[in-house]
Image 1 (cartoon, rainbow, N blue to C red):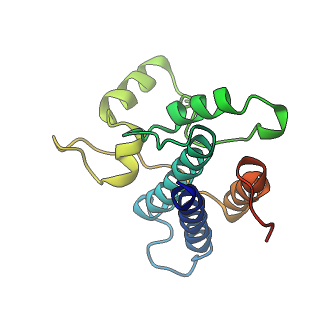
Image 2 (cartoon, rainbow, N blue to C red):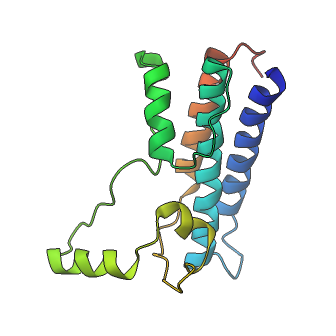
Length: 163
């Protein structure tokens, strides 16, 4: 189990570091496309998923089975780590904020983009051809913020040598 716990954290960090690198690739032809931003967001999503699974596994000594929703994993994380020192900001846990949209525009957007966020980040279209919703870019400083949080909690969650 020790290998699994350590591997979950290491893989989480690897995904996050690649997301950071992609956020710096401003010279890439694809950089300003929604497809590129979705790939960067998917890397952040998977890094977050693996970090939460690392923390859950470190506490329960069991791997969470078939759960990919950040909000569900985050709720379990908060149950296991209620102390303030473990309080972290996690992406993909809240409802979408439709700032400046009318109720009709919100309803139309939800109809047009019915795929879950998890699926939107992985695939360009759904099984029935439904569109994905382009998301905003994740700037390097935001991604580095998540990396700093994960690194700060690593040895608090599971004993390790500080790097």
